[in-house]
Image 1 (spheres, rainbow, N blue to C red):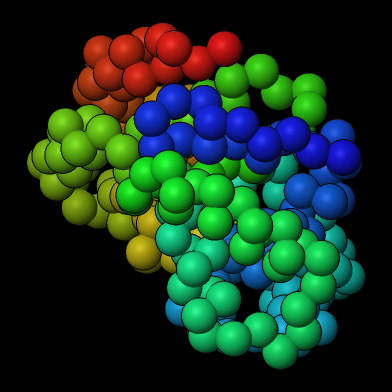
Image 2 (spheres, rainbow, N blue to C red):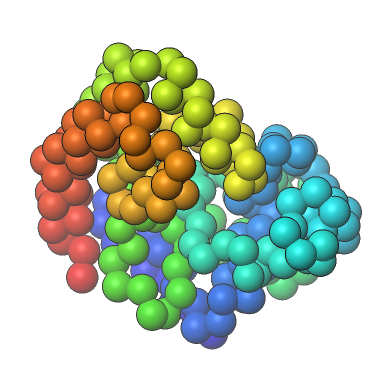
Length: 217
């Protein structure tokens, strides 16, 4: 079971009782958006599952539903995937197509997040949405990141690449992890410039996040 709601202008949420259902609903669309292998490409779920078990899983099986706890995509990713044609359509694709019809009738350039029922406002996923929707916040983040030591930024990106992220969303992921929980960067916290970079991003985040989420219930 799931609930679907508009959280605020241009931001929508799919909230699931079952983590497996959440992951399988988003898989094709999230991985089209930012997979290290399938970004921008058409693929079947069987093809993806085989690749993931061999190349991404830490346990050698298809562990995707255990590995990922939330999702975030520009809503028009759904349109792009379905416009390419889906060789193995299923009920998850039917659901996403129906939701995109609703979203696109209400606004342009929307963002969709997926969370589980036990999350309140998921700050991590909502920060991704803010980066996409709030141009001033996004430009501020890019300015801060561009001024940071390139070697530090590259080191943080390498951490994310090992976790399955790609260059297309790397800066968004860096700013989100540094502002909402940076455990994945534990080996770099003492690197020169790390704390200063995190402080600047957190100050910017604190300036924008309350206004971005003030009407979300």
